[in-house]
Length: 138
Image 1 (cartoon, rainbow, N blue to C red):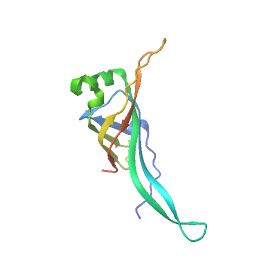
Image 2: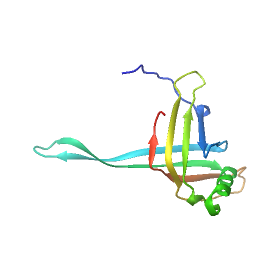
Image 3: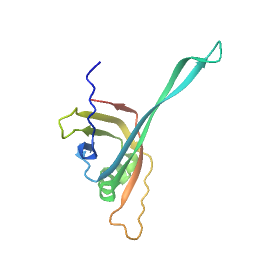
Image 4: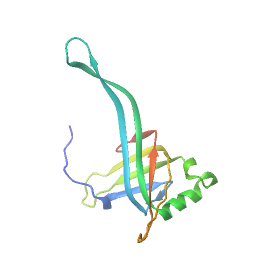
């Protein structure tokens, strides 16, 4: 077992790359890896084993509208829902801690919803995503 470090990562340590471009206008990223799990019951009233099933991957990106418009311009038929891309999330701590790079494979956006209200200074767009795999600590 390796040495445990309690160093923490800050938002300022994170860089998100989409299509080879650093996203400057990203304000939130979230990605989740889930696996179906069930308990195997047999003799008695306690489970004997945990059974593992399919994995699932989803998340969201929250971007400035200008980032969304740039992505849309690069999309086939200007349809962002047709894009398939990788996201590279790099955690590079300024204190010299461990660098962590996660790669989300075959990412697609599932929904685009724009909204604006009086007094807003800029538009933030939340984009739900699905993807096929996450390669952690690359």
